[in-house]
Length: 106
Image 1: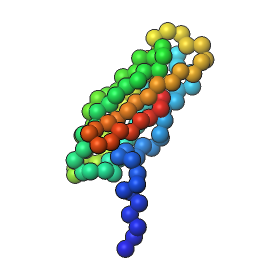
Image 2: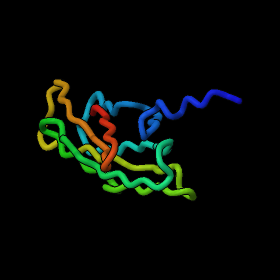
Image 3: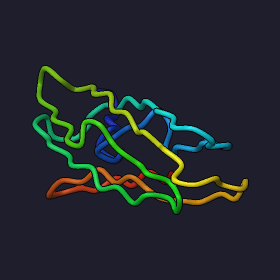
């Protein structure tokens, strides 16, 4: 039999582990697709820690996975609240349920 390595992965396999916007001058929406490799029926809630000076919104705020829906796409909208002068500010998006939490640096 083949060695099953998926059990060592976090609940989400993200196509990119972090979200980075080098020059945020106007609202931008970033899309991410996630594949559930954990329990078949999983519900994850978004916890947003907005970067300083940036309004961060996640839609949908809840991801539900079941046997028919193993892949979900969500969007992160980043809006500058004031003019950012090239300084990087950092925040995070955390998807969590009762068992697991997956943090994505922003």
